[in-house]
Every structure is written in structure tokens, then in C-alpha cells.
Amino acid sequence: MLSSSPVNAPAPETAAQSSPARSPPATVADTSMPVDLTDD
Image 1 (spheres, rainbow, N blue to C red):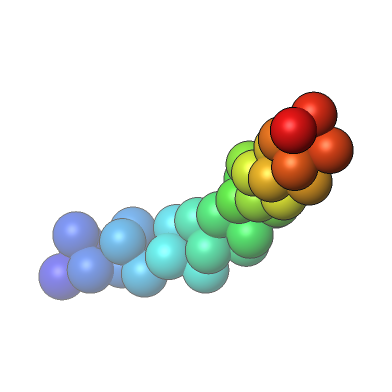
Image 2: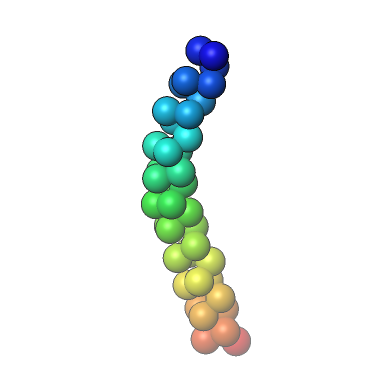
């Protein structure tokens, strides 16, 4: 039960952090794609 409690607590926090954390990488990939095309 203790494991479920802490796991559930960070679950929402992790998801929130995952959103912003994925935002930077997603932007980099998006920029890399257009940048690569422009470079070509």
C-alpha cells in the first residue's frame, strides 16, 4: 500500500514534468526536421 501511495503521488507530478520535459525535446526534433530540410 505504501508503494501504491508514493507511486500514485508522483504519477501526476511525473506526468506534469513529462509534459514539459518532452516539450523541449519535441521542439528540438521539430526544429531539427525543418532545419535539416532548410539546410538541404
